[in-house]
Length: 124
Image (cartoon, helix red, strand yellow):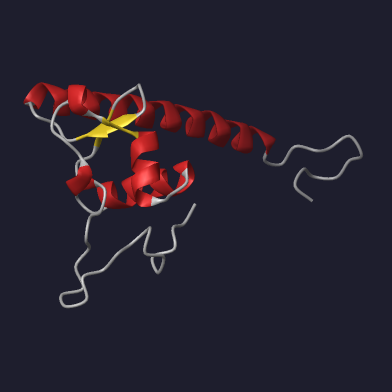
Protein backbone atom coordinates (compact mmCIF):
# COMPACT_ATOMS: atom_id res chain seq x y z
CA UNK A 1 0.00 0.00 0.00
CA UNK A 2 1.38 3.39 -1.01
CA UNK A 3 0.52 6.33 1.23
CA UNK A 4 -0.56 9.62 -0.28
CA UNK A 5 2.19 12.03 0.71
CA UNK A 6 -0.08 14.98 -0.14
CA UNK A 7 -2.56 13.90 2.55
CA UNK A 8 -1.85 15.88 5.73
CA UNK A 9 -2.64 12.78 7.78
CA UNK A 10 0.18 10.95 6.01
CA UNK A 11 2.85 13.56 5.51
CA UNK A 12 2.66 16.97 7.06
CA UNK A 13 5.40 19.34 5.92
CA UNK A 14 7.01 22.28 7.61
CA UNK A 15 6.25 25.17 5.25
CA UNK A 16 9.67 26.77 5.61
CA UNK A 17 12.18 23.96 5.54
CA UNK A 18 10.29 21.15 3.79
CA UNK A 19 11.33 18.74 6.53
CA UNK A 20 9.04 16.00 7.78
CA UNK A 21 7.04 16.92 10.81
CA UNK A 22 6.10 14.05 13.10
CA UNK A 23 2.62 14.26 14.56
CA UNK A 24 2.33 10.96 16.43
CA UNK A 25 5.79 10.59 17.97
CA UNK A 26 5.53 13.85 19.99
CA UNK A 27 2.18 12.70 21.44
CA UNK A 28 3.71 9.59 22.99
CA UNK A 29 5.03 9.06 26.49
CA UNK A 30 8.14 7.16 27.53
CA UNK A 31 7.77 3.55 28.68
CA UNK A 32 5.46 0.65 27.82
CA UNK A 33 3.44 1.28 30.99
CA UNK A 34 2.56 4.74 29.60
CA UNK A 35 1.57 3.56 26.12
CA UNK A 36 -1.09 5.65 24.41
CA UNK A 37 -3.86 3.41 23.10
CA UNK A 38 -4.71 3.14 19.44
CA UNK A 39 -8.23 4.40 20.19
CA UNK A 40 -6.90 7.47 22.00
CA UNK A 41 -4.67 8.37 19.07
CA UNK A 42 -7.45 7.73 16.54
CA UNK A 43 -9.76 10.06 18.46
CA UNK A 44 -7.16 12.79 19.01
CA UNK A 45 -6.10 12.78 15.36
CA UNK A 46 -9.52 12.04 13.84
CA UNK A 47 -8.08 9.05 11.97
CA UNK A 48 -9.25 5.56 11.20
CA UNK A 49 -7.14 2.67 12.45
CA UNK A 50 -5.83 2.13 8.92
CA UNK A 51 -4.81 5.81 8.62
CA UNK A 52 -3.12 5.69 12.03
CA UNK A 53 -1.12 2.59 11.12
CA UNK A 54 -0.08 4.21 7.83
CA UNK A 55 1.00 7.35 9.67
CA UNK A 56 2.99 5.33 12.25
CA UNK A 57 4.69 3.47 9.39
CA UNK A 58 5.45 6.76 7.64
CA UNK A 59 7.01 8.28 10.77
CA UNK A 60 9.01 5.12 11.47
CA UNK A 61 10.27 5.12 7.88
CA UNK A 62 11.41 8.72 8.37
CA UNK A 63 13.37 8.13 11.56
CA UNK A 64 10.91 8.15 14.45
CA UNK A 65 11.25 5.25 16.86
CA UNK A 66 7.67 4.48 17.78
CA UNK A 67 7.40 1.33 19.85
CA UNK A 68 4.18 -0.63 20.01
CA UNK A 69 2.76 -2.95 22.61
CA UNK A 70 0.82 -6.15 22.06
CA UNK A 71 -2.13 -4.53 23.84
CA UNK A 72 -2.56 -1.95 21.08
CA UNK A 73 -0.67 1.06 22.33
CA UNK A 74 2.26 3.16 21.18
CA UNK A 75 5.11 4.61 23.23
CA UNK A 76 8.67 5.90 23.14
CA UNK A 77 11.28 3.59 24.64
CA UNK A 78 12.62 4.60 28.03
CA UNK A 79 15.32 1.95 28.31
CA UNK A 80 17.67 -0.02 26.13
CA UNK A 81 15.69 -3.14 27.11
CA UNK A 82 12.41 -1.72 25.75
CA UNK A 83 14.11 -0.76 22.50
CA UNK A 84 15.70 -4.20 22.26
CA UNK A 85 12.33 -5.93 22.79
CA UNK A 86 10.75 -3.75 20.09
CA UNK A 87 13.64 -4.49 17.71
CA UNK A 88 13.38 -8.25 18.33
CA UNK A 89 9.63 -8.15 17.66
CA UNK A 90 10.16 -6.40 14.33
CA UNK A 91 12.91 -8.85 13.48
CA UNK A 92 10.58 -11.82 14.15
CA UNK A 93 7.88 -10.26 11.98
CA UNK A 94 10.36 -9.62 9.15
CA UNK A 95 11.68 -13.19 9.38
CA UNK A 96 8.16 -14.56 9.14
CA UNK A 97 7.42 -12.44 6.07
CA UNK A 98 10.66 -13.50 4.37
CA UNK A 99 9.88 -17.17 5.05
CA UNK A 100 6.47 -16.75 3.41
CA UNK A 101 8.10 -15.03 0.43
CA UNK A 102 10.59 -17.89 0.10
CA UNK A 103 7.74 -20.43 -0.01
CA UNK A 104 5.83 -18.38 -2.60
CA UNK A 105 8.97 -17.97 -4.73
CA UNK A 106 9.60 -21.73 -4.58
CA UNK A 107 6.02 -22.45 -5.68
CA UNK A 108 6.41 -20.00 -8.58
CA UNK A 109 9.67 -21.63 -9.66
CA UNK A 110 8.13 -25.11 -9.49
CA UNK A 111 5.14 -23.95 -11.53
CA UNK A 112 7.39 -22.42 -14.19
CA UNK A 113 7.00 -24.38 -17.39
CA UNK A 114 4.44 -26.86 -16.03
CA UNK A 115 1.57 -27.73 -18.30
CA UNK A 116 -2.06 -27.29 -17.35
CA UNK A 117 -4.57 -30.12 -17.77
CA UNK A 118 -5.46 -28.90 -21.27
CA UNK A 119 -1.82 -28.97 -22.44
CA UNK A 120 -1.10 -25.23 -22.32
CA UNK A 121 1.77 -23.87 -20.27
CA UNK A 122 0.69 -22.48 -16.92
CA UNK A 123 0.41 -18.70 -16.85
CA UNK A 124 -0.93 -18.52 -20.43
